[in-house]
Length: 386
Image 1 (cartoon, rainbow, N blue to C red):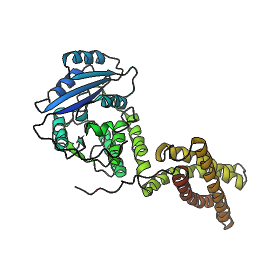
Image 2 (image 1 turned 180 degrees about the vertical axis):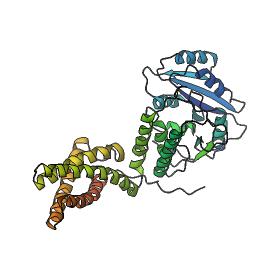
Image 3 (image 1 turned 135 degrees about the vertical axis):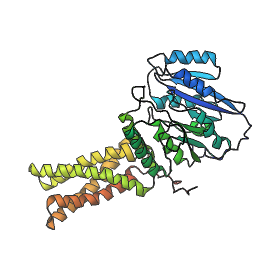
Image 4 (image 1 turned 90 degrees about the horizontal axis):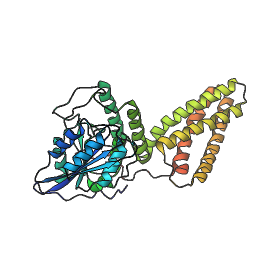
């Protein structure tokens, strides 16, 4: 990802003709695709040229046939197709790579979003004030279909967590309507294949310190009976993506806060295993070391999954050896502390709790500075409110 791409773009005259590439990921939307394309084409005018890129994600209905028919009618429409279903994020990635416009927008084929709003979202981009503009369903004074309370609550929770880690104050991180300067979005490596695209791209544009604006949009949400596809699985994936794409880049203090959660879970595993082994008659040293190393494996797995990356300084084998060395040193400290606390008269379980707290700090330091010595984002700092 190129962090230098955020250079200010020259403002465009309101009468200057610009080109907008609209990427339309499509999976089993034969009923709405034509109406969607017609609605997008309707926003073209003397100052706005359109390029429509429909990406058929291996639909099992007649979506591809409809798309090809539309392409034969409208020369500004391009059809791309996946041979296997890969998800919305993959379809968006394919479409973005093909885009040639000055700006790039994402438009779902299900007609939940009104393309008329795209013209308003383009205004800060055309004026040179913004690099990215996001449409918010929660700022809108326009049409907004009333649907699922728990979806709305989940969206606000995910947006709040994302804002905490990106230092943005978005109201709708999960919004489909995101419009970019083309060079910005094409500089971002999109990794997610499904709906994790939304938190991933927000994390990455935040790390680029781009000028991000938000405008209210209308929203005609669908029910599941009407074909809505996003579900609880995607909500969990969004949570994972918020942590995955943000935590390796946040300041150390915030990393430690989240590592404490990982370490706390590992500590519970450590304590339960220790107590179980003691109850089974294991010697104190054996129970302490066995519980410690098994909990360390859990800690390592969660740290790699959420907090640190496997691409810092070490090759894989070296990294494993370095990790084992760090674990070995901390385990000796853990054993010494446990024995000392027991010698002071504390019950074994309480002694283990205290020594685990010491190990939490040492483990984080060892992983952060020795096993995964990656730099946090040097540009991360609280943004001044506008």
